[in-house]
Image (cartoon, rainbow, N blue to C red):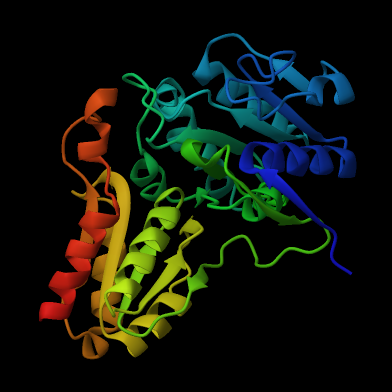
Length: 327
């Protein structure tokens, strides 16, 4: 019997981490201001009061030190969960993530596991300043040895954070910060999908729309507008960025013959570029039009007043849908 509740994503993540900490005393949290403050977005609010300062650890402002310490804790049998305050702050720890964390299991021929989760709020839509709104997912998906995932709903957030913590491999857990506050149903009794499965969130027949994180809600807006104009769009939430579950995407493209990928990140050498290339290779004879991409522009993320021009919206996605249908 399902146990349903309604939560915003921030609270769903909080509940998921709390459950993982109850399930195992080897799970601990680390990050800047995550204790009494509960983090910038209050995702860890109340967890230090429940689990104590030895398991919810306020760290110095030093991302390299946070990741390096987590690596040592993982070697000692712990399952650390690191919070990076904002997407743009991850780069001081980038060397530890890509040259150490991602490679240690391979370096030890599988004998040493690295169960480390790195939580990163990412993306735009909150009107923040420089270094507080970025989409760095391609850096991590390009790095062998890392698993990379991003929930788009509170229910996925609740279950995916637990699955990420249970993974024996390092997981970069990208949290779309603009989705922290909208509420959604959470089934506390049963997970809907495995960690690395993509998900069809809306059925359609004419064009396949694919995206991840905050972009999924924008794709759903575009699909609703397209339907009012007589076009049926299928929407797929990628959920896992590395590895990618191509099965539902390829099945959908085989039915629709057209695909549009949308992302907040710049387009050049991006995740969308890789997925477009792979779908073209594996579904070439099903395609009636090129796989099209809608993305942020190939410039640094702009000031808050210009983010509406930079980020893909429903109108830009519908323009791509129209172009796909015109072939």
